[in-house]
Amino acid sequence: MNKTLVEIGKRIIPVQMLPLARKLILIGKLTFDSQKLRKIMTYYSSQETNKEINEILTYLPKCGVQPFPYPWAIMDEASTIKIYYDEERDLRYVILDGKKLYYPRGMSDDNIKNSYYFVQKIEQHTSSPHRYLTPDFNISEEDIVVDCGVAEGNFSLAIVDQVKKIYLFEPEEQWMESLRATFAPWENKIVIVQNFISDISDENTVTLDEYFAGKNSPTFCKIDVDGYEGRVLNGSKRLLDSGELKKIVICTYHYANDEEKLGKILRSYDYVTTPSSGYMLFSMYDELKPPYFRRGLLRCVKQ
Image (cartoon, rainbow, N blue to C red; front, side, top):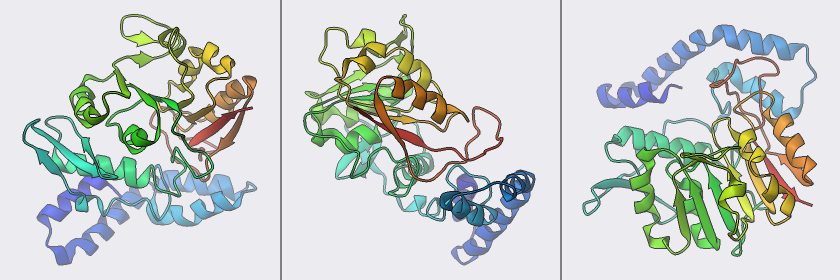
């Protein structure tokens, strides 16, 4: 359901009318998505499917085309997120696991609530195909972590007390002030690097191999960089080959063939790759086409 329309509706529609408003918005979305839905359902009607895909196909006509086609992936509770104000820093923040997660100056309350709810309550939901860590794939107190694609920093903030050191790679200036505020209590174990990560190094871009030359090697790496995952790996050949980088979690949903392409690269360096459970329905960077559903990420362990 369109989260912006829902939030607007909550402000201008009487409370008793909200259920009807939500129903009308959903009807409109399903009508808008009808052609895509027909293509998806027709394609899978002639394919052999597994239990996970059957679950999505059952729910898809009820929710329309959305990145997480599951009953738990709804935004209706985003408005319940509490926002606090830090007068000294003049920044807003939310509480994540008892810690302050700051947001950029000028970001509206609604955008903060929607952003936090989506990345923390949906992307990192226990059943989400985008969830980075699991009980069987986790970090340890001796880990040196590389967080590639930080944004607001929710992943690193969630684990900061459980690891030895974290390198935050985030190129966008809009996040710098809020990241420094969020991680100020851990400045002894946090390094914020304002660079793009790729397979070349120049004024604004760096490879992980070059950055960590002469430094202690990272042992855990999270890579979520909007479709540039392959280039990050190509610029990390020494680290991948060293045996010191024990675990990698890498997103595979940005492009249709990422699971196969990125998995092949990592397996060539003797990583055992395991896809996350469930699927995503995502087409921001390429065309939505068969087989339509994509694994959210690969969890990789060095043999």
